[in-house]
Image (cartoon, rainbow, N blue to C red; front, side, top):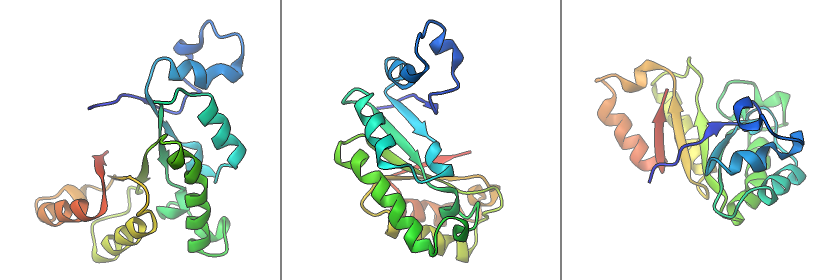
Amino acid sequence: MINIGLTGWGDHYSLYEDLERQTDKLKTYAGHFPVVELDATYYAIQPERNILKWIKETPDTFEFVVKIHQALTLHADYKTFADTRQELFDQFKNMLEPLHTQKKLAMVLVQFPPWFDCNAQNIKYILYVRQQLQAFPMCVEFRHQSWFSDTFKEQNIGIFNRTSDHSCSS
């Protein structure tokens, strides 16, 4: 099955032309789409109250594709957000639990930066991320073209088969 959704629910103005309360955006969005990419999690670990609010505001069948925190894909230094990378992973996983428990987590989107090229060190890091997120469905998005080259194609298919429930490309 293919589900179509958008990145976030706040900036799609044509959906909200007749909306009386700005706080009803997610409810309205969920009336049109079955899934959304939750990108607020890229910038900050969301407090449990936000996660529970979003669960409550959406139908039982609605799902979230949760974008992994920027420091966990090497876009930013984890030390800005936590004492250790493990601490940040633990915070992220704890944040996911209510969505996972309520069956509203479609997957975790692990979007690597444009400079994250195909090399042994980065492959090792992908395997580390998969191990950290083993309890959750995961999707990997690469932005560096080396991941799609003929040289690495077969190797990368093997990595996807071992590490992800889904793959995507950009």
